[in-house]
Length: 238
Length: 307
Image (tube, rainbow over all chains, first blue to last red; front, top):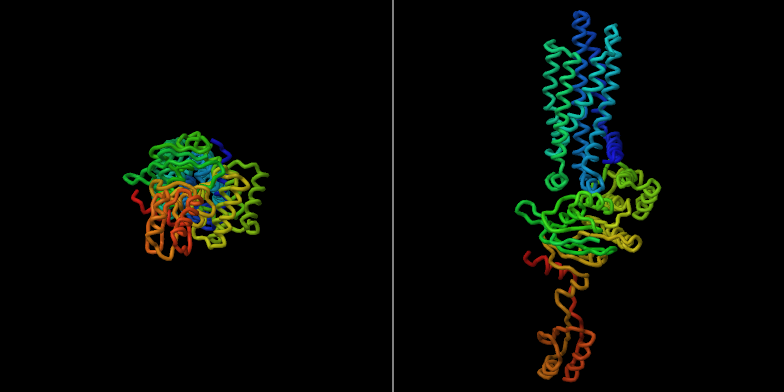
């Protein structure tokens, strides 16, 4: 497998994303809204909450970045595969000396890097604004570091892989987006447990969440490899 | 360069390609003629390692299409223009070609040279920075042809290259195909149902409708409809003329009022004898002509045959 070929695929997708305003806005607006909106929301709760409660809220807010890592690649990954399908560009692409692994990796890089970069940028804004708002140096901390370095990439990969699987079964980007978003319900469940303080966002719990994400990522990788069949793509994708 | 032996592809109960056996030599333009849904695209997809075969053999330049390692080698030496051009509308013409050039691992200097060469040849150089999405159908088709050639392939598969093109663009593409054969000795497998196009550019033609119905040069296929026949129009067919012709070693003859349709083996030798016999018998010849059929006659004859 030649990694440079995957980079060529990713580079081409980056160029296309830059020219598709809908994708570009989806990529930029959500992380920025969240990163500015959450600290603003914090201001309204500061008067009534004690420092312990603020810490719980900030902890729960940190988990939002795992959810964001799942939501954000949705439109990119769905477009990345379905875009090829819609523009009929898969056939000439598959006729090149490109292996399935190189193509899939390229598609994953194309969705993964912009999303993770935007999440990192958003998280820096969020941490800075939260510290300014609370007047304490709550961030950076080990929990947020773990979330950004381990959990965010794993959640992004999960989202991208699911989208690749969904894309092979649907015909338009919106349906793929909606199906992909349906599967983020478990993340919301974890978030509710965090805000109600039934579960705390400590390193151990994050390890468990990350381990689950890792296992699902590995399983999905094998499903993807098994279902990415050139013959089926060209004869059954309508 | 391209060899198939009983190549077959089934989709469930439907046999799209049934026992295809053919050989295309290096530098040859092979026309694959058939109606819509005949299995032409399926054949090209099997030969370009995009889909698998159900049975039979197929090889390109000695590489087997169903061998995973050979498949990559085949894809390095082929260029494909699919039925749907499949360009990236958001990218410029230049970027579309550059992307494919990189995937084929063309060195940068050669890539640039080829992009400029093909875009100039196809009259698109001035539009190189324009998004493909803004191109007309004809321009897109030309750009997709340039894309298929960016790595100097040995074999080029063209699936309906002039379909839906205006006559001028179609001529540009046809001239370009002939130029490629002349300059680069590229082997070209041309899927088409445009008979005029096939007749103009192809060295060999296969008429295909699920299975290969006929194979030969355009002239051979035309001849295969009527055979080699001479038509002699005389003022009046008399017993003396028929008796004189009976003495010649003719294969067969049909008389229709003043028209004699004679089956000949070697027209250049037999026709003078026929004329002499008729004139000698007192016949007045109005004209002598070869009974000619067109590629269209051949095509219709073979595609209408039961599969």
